[in-house]
Structure formats: C-alpha cells, structure tokens
Amino acid sequence: MLKQREQSAFSYLYDHYSGALYSIILNIVPDRDLASDVLQEVFIKIWKQIESYDNIKGRLFTWMLNVARNASIDAVRSKGYQKSQQNRELTESVYFAGGSTETNTDKIGLKKVVNSLKEEYKVLIILSYFEGFTQEEISKMLGIPLGTVKTRMRSAISQLKQLIR
Amino acid sequence: MELQVYIESGVIESYVLGIADPEEILEVDRMKEQYPEVQQAIDEFSIAIEEQAFKNAVEPPEEIKQQLLSSFQFHHPAKSNTETPLLVAYKSTVDNETPNISSIPSITNWKYLAAASIVLFVVSATANLLLYNRYTSTKSQYVALINERNSLQANNQVYQTKLRDYQSATEMMADPSVAMVQLKDPAHKKDNMATVFWDKKTKDVYLLTNKLPAPNTNQQYQLWALVDGKPVDAGMLDPLCTSLCKMKNIPLAQAFAITLEKVGGSPVPTMDQLFVMGNI
Image (cartoon, rainbow over all chains, first blue to last red; front, side):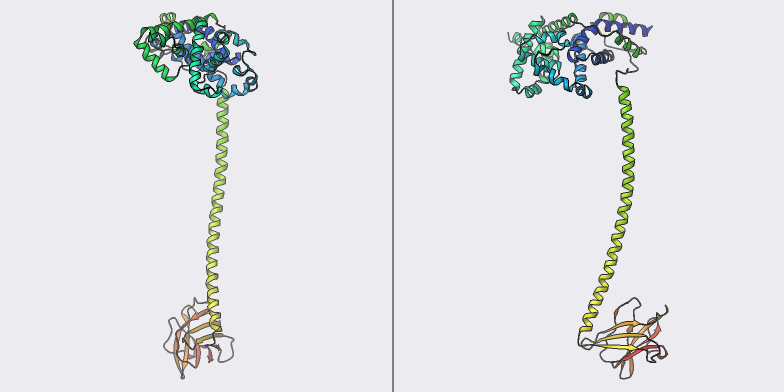
C-alpha cells in the first residue's frame, strides 16, 4: 500500500517536472545519452532530499532547477566527459565561436533566450549560468576587470529578464 | 526608492538563477526577510523562469522513468515533521510519510568504478609486496656491508700496529748505540735463536724471538742478563708479543740467556732448561 502510494507520488513528480528539467540539462549537456544519465541522477537526488527541501527558501521548481543545473555542470566538468569532448570543444565553444556553430540544444529552453542576447552579455550568462564559473574566474578567462564583469553581468541579467517576461 | 533600485539591480535574478556571489546571497536572504517586495520580486522571477522552462519542456526518453521506478524500493516510511507543501499532488498522496531509498541505483559506471578500484587494489598490493622484498634484500645487503667494513677496519688496525712496531724496530736497529746480540743454542744442536737489542745509552732491552719452540701453557720463557758471571732477571717474555718485545732495563751485562721457567718466572735460572745464549 505504502509502496504504491510513494510510487505514485514519484510518478507524479517525474511526469510533471522531467520535461522542464530535461530541457535545462540538455542546455548544459548537449550529449543526449549523458543528459539522460544526468536526469536520472537528478531525480534520485531530488527524491532523496525532498524532505530537507524548505519552501521558505524558494519555490520547489527553483530548487529542482538548481539541482539539475549543478548536476549538469558537474557532469560536463567530469574528466571522462572532458576527454571525449576535447576536440569538439575547440570548435564549438560558445565564447570562441560565438553563435555561428549552434548545436540543436542551443535552440531549446533558456539557452534559446540567452542566444538572442548581445554577444558580450551572452558570453557572461553562458559562462556563469551554463558553465558554472564564478565572476572572478570569468574576469580572468576573458581578461576583463572584475568590476566590469559585475556591471556587465547586471545589465545582461536585466536584458534577460525582459526577454523572459 | 532605494529598495526599487536594489530590486532592479539584477541581484534578484542572479540569486534565483544561482549565479550570485556568496555575499550577494547573504544580502538577498537578509533583504527578503525585511522587505516583502524583495520576496515578491524573487517569486515573480522564479515563476517566470518556471513558466519559461515548462513552455520549452523536452520529453525525456521513455525508459528513464521505468529505470528510476525499478531502482527505487519504496518501503520503511519515516515520519517527517516538516510538511512539504507546494507540490499538492505529492502532499495529498504521501502526506507526512517520507520516501526511503535503500539502494542507490547504478547510473552508468559504478561497475567500472568497482572494477577500477579492485584493479588498483591488486596493483597496489603487488607493488607493496615487491617493494617489501626489495627492502628486505637491500637491508641484508646493507648489514653484510657493515660487517665487511668492520672487519676491514679491524684488519687495518692490526696492520697499522704491526707496521708501527716494525718501524720502531728498524729505527732502533739503525741506532749506533744499540748493541745487537744473537742468542743461540749453546750446545749447537738445535737451531733455536733469539736476538737481544740493548741500548747502551738508555739501558733499554728488546727481545726478538727468531725461533723458539712454543712453550706449554704453564711455562714461560725468561730472559737473563749475565753480569760478572751472575744471572740477573731481565723479564718474562709475554706470549702475546709476536715481534720486538720490551724487556727490563739492564745497566750492565756481558751476556744474555733464555731459560724456560714456570709461568711468572723464577728468581734463579733453571740451567737444564737453557735454550739460547749469546755474548755481547
């Protein structure tokens, strides 16, 4: 009985949220097989931690989205993935090649919105949100002072906010 | 007014997206407690993101859900004090019971991890064994070398002592004030022989036993100086002395003789045990 009830609760959770989460995972992990692995991992994490989730801290989906985003960034940063993608990254890296070599996964979800931003804003959102770098790391990577990164990031975000609304 | 500037600065959106600095997060956490407007802005952007995500949802492969369901084992519900609202359907079906996962499912590569760790363990154990063997053999070689060095050092000391003895003997023999007296068998039957070096200036007496039969353990050779026909004790021959042996000082003598006496010597020579004799 209990087992069945838990199972149906999980089914509901999965049916309701998996599509939205899968889209954000694909934005970060373009490889569909790996993205599916990450989705599984994300639901296991969510299911294990749902009792520690506190709604005062924010909406359930916002929390789940962050779990998915972090798991995706971890997957992309893992050694095995880095190796397999080494050659591709040289040609496909967004901040080197700009939007000219968009993959399919760039045309879905939040990334589609981000791709319509001005180039200098897009780079910042991609590096921080989709690749998980801190502003300090971004400042070093792009050779831009940290203060500039901060102000540009603010502008990029308010642009993004307009587009999402 | 200032609050509005803060809300529109972009920090709220950074916070919701999870790309805010740690300080910014603390600040927003503090601000939202204090100002409902901040909380409202957070909620609004969260909802916007949520709607955006649902609008762009991508259906994941069918089999993932089945894999997840079969990898969970739903049992032993634990009581939870905190409610989990927001998810209405979840709340109504599960209420206060919390899910329990007894086994974490394999995603793709735990097998590889397990295999890799076993391989690593075996490699490490083998390496340890090899290194231990090498260590023990090196240690025994080291001990052997130490022993060899010690014995070489001891030999070296023996040779040094001998060399020093020969050196002083040579110097003494070259000294013109030293008289060399050859002592031989008075009966001329045996080729027993000894040599006495007598320094006339210092009156020192040295004895070199060229050839004398080895005495019994309870016997010892004794040197005598003949002074005006009377024998004077000139000292016992140390059985450990192998080259030139220092004897007692003798101020005046006409001849030297060696007799075999009991250990420790005798006040008068035992004449039938006279081995060698020689005049100056």
